[in-house]
Every structure is written in C-alpha cells, then in structure tokens.
Length: 170
Image (cartoon, rainbow, N blue to C red; front, side, top):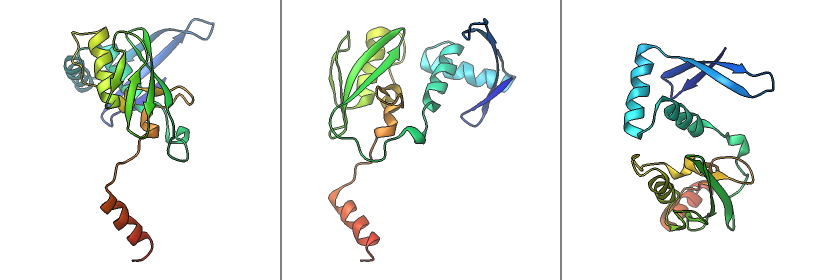
C-alpha cells in the first residue's frame, strides 16, 4: 500500500496492481466520506471526473526543487503540455514570461503561461472551465520539471534598490 497525501487534507490509499510486465493494469482507490465530498467538489469545479481530479492534483505536486536550475533561465525554453491525449509543444520566454504554442488548434503567442493553458483547454475541451495555472500546466522538455521551476519574481527598480541596500548594510 502506498499512501499519498494531497493538499494536506485529502489522503488517498492507492494499491497498484501490476500486470507482470511493470505496467500498471489497475489501481484501487478508497476514500472516506469527507475526501469523497472534496473530490466531488473539485470534479464539479474543474469539469472533470474523479480520476481527472487525482491526475490534476498529482501533476500539481510533481517535480521537485531538486530539478530546478541553479540560476535564471535565459533564451527560449522548449516546453510541452499533455492534455486530453494531446502533446502540445511550446516555447517559453523567461524574459517576457510569455509562451508560444507552436502547433495545434491553440497555436499562437500568449502573454502568460496561464493564458496559453487556457487556450489549450478551450481548444481541446470547450465544455470544461478553462481556468488553469499555466506554471503547473506546462512541462520543461529538458528537465521534466513543471514550468514553475523557472518562474522568477518580478520586482520594481525601487524594490531591487531597497533589497540591495539592505543586503549591503545601507
């Protein structure tokens, strides 16, 4: 048995049944009443079934800080998203924090990763609520980590100057 803790409150007990060739053939999931209600609520909010809820939560927590690069990314970064059986290729620009979807029905340039994620959802599944955090939706090709691993905090010039003064005892 493998116990996976998701979002602090939702505990799923998963029992993997392998088919002898290392492939997962089935998975047993037992939920208590409270967890079942939470999964149902998320399923309604996200327009997916219970499996979709579990997949989305697992995707959110995939990747670790160990996979994050040491410094800020420079140049375009090859990324992709897997959604509804489709692999959607893209390029992320760390400087502008914009994302270009290279092919498919959502092809185009988007101001943010979340805008690009929304376009993918609308293109492939128009019935679902198209709200998605693009930082956890897109995957960096080179590392397999979520785009979140490349995210930088934007600061104003005044904030940068204040931080530098504080670091140097000024």
